[in-house]
Length: 191
Image 1 (cartoon, rainbow, N blue to C red):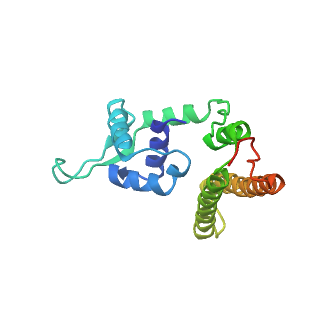
Image 2 (cartoon, helix red, strand yellow):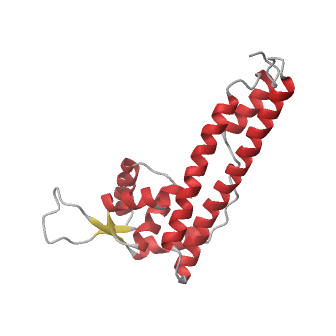
């Protein structure tokens, strides 16, 4: 996915100013495709130059005033074409998993603290997703809402996986430490 397509999607959902768009990103699309406010504003300019979006006419002079943007037919066509393309899944790159492989070689001192920290972060995100689902998807869903809920369910499933896996990893590290019991680090190093 690319940032221009994320912006086109958000603007098709609701024409917005750059500031409104960045706030909406922070509350929705940003959960799975993050961008800084600066990146969003820069991309809005590029999309406007490409003829994919336009600033809506304003009754006041535009200097210093917020501009609301809407998607033009060319932008909708670009997004439609992009959404129908095939794309292979991206390989996972996660520093925590790499650090665990390294700990298997050099020792796992301090690894349990990092696992607990990650567990707390994933649990917090899972709780936030569950709150969003309860708040926004309690009533019978429209077609658009059904697809949005599926995206949210993907996030819930991923966070559930991480919470369960991190809990298992913490149990495993604790078990290794208990087995070592003599002060030797279960990863092969010394404490």
